[in-house]
Length: 355
Image (cartoon, rainbow, N blue to C red; front, side):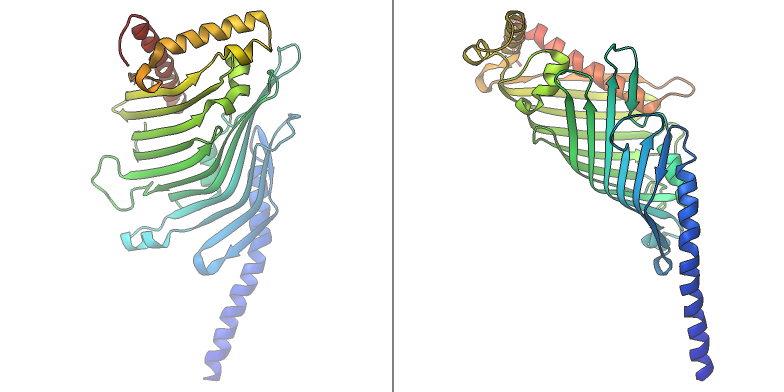
């Protein structure tokens, strides 16, 4: 019996020693990996090893753009937890899960006074999926974000633009199809967040990320955004402001067999761009003319019984290029459909059609 206790004590002592030996080694490896990035430098505060659950936790991650004087880090993460996904063992696979707690992403685009030099901190110049995979020795099958925040700033325009998503929660499951589902889109992703203007955004996706060109079906709804809270953004880029109104966007996008299809339906409620009583007391004469024209366009677009501006335009596109930039292509198709939706509705309403 004494030998059993001695053996048990030796085993426990071994794992305790291994725990303390591994932490500084892993910390050095993580810092080395973060500093190997081409466009960003990184550091962490600490690493905790959890041998009992096959995991390690990185604390206090910070990434900064190299050669930039932007005053905020591109990414800061409270904790990044990388572990074995234990429930996947019942499906006969050893895979991993990644949990990001309270990540903050600061996207910044700014120009100098002359406007001939642009600094960008948007993250599009790195492959972040590859970087996370480098930190995870197992194939990632589950990915989660808890209480994330994303900001977008452009201090070079007047007024300064400061938009955000907050309270972002996201869960992607069965990424590697460990359940061997026969569904064409075996993986799922659900996300929700609060937007600038106190709106809400909800995303529900079915995906197949194992194809050379990923396929998916996405349903997204952006609801009840108070446009008056976006006035700095609107003034900076559209040169007018909104007195009243809310914005909602409903869209469905499918990518299948290298083809993009779906629809986009943006609509406005109770939109008031030009308030004669309030606006004539401030601003320039020419700005008032511009705001009046925009307001007249919105009036033409309105579904008069409920003060709603709405339309629906199909989304169509192709990913036929040998090495397509899938996110950029989808975004361009989406953006063009949004503009087309507004333009078509304007033309239809100005001819006397109904929304």
